[in-house]
Length: 130
Image 1 (tube, rainbow, N blue to C red):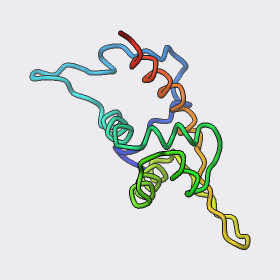
Image 2: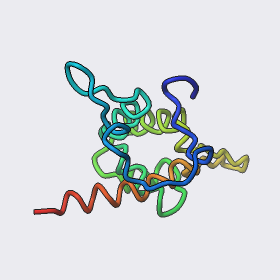
Image 3: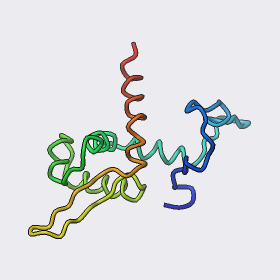
Image 4: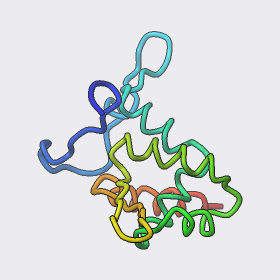
């Protein structure tokens, strides 16, 4: 994706601490908090139902659609398909089609998807706080 919906390319920035300063996270404006549109896009995408579960399953290894249906309990085929397309468009998941008999389709995480592993671990750790 390009424009406001693209994730930042962190490889181009000099290395620095992962913890952003207040100005980077939420620079104050006169009437509230202004958030970078890329950050807002990431929050919106990751906050959608099933997205974190799908990514967590794919962090282990690539899976077929049917495997994902079994591992992400409660998700419908239609919703899983929709979320996978969104993650594909965001550059997080890649759909691999193997021309065999029968044709096999698997989903795997791209570099940006694997980078979310530490984010998911941090969210889980935060959720365990008293």
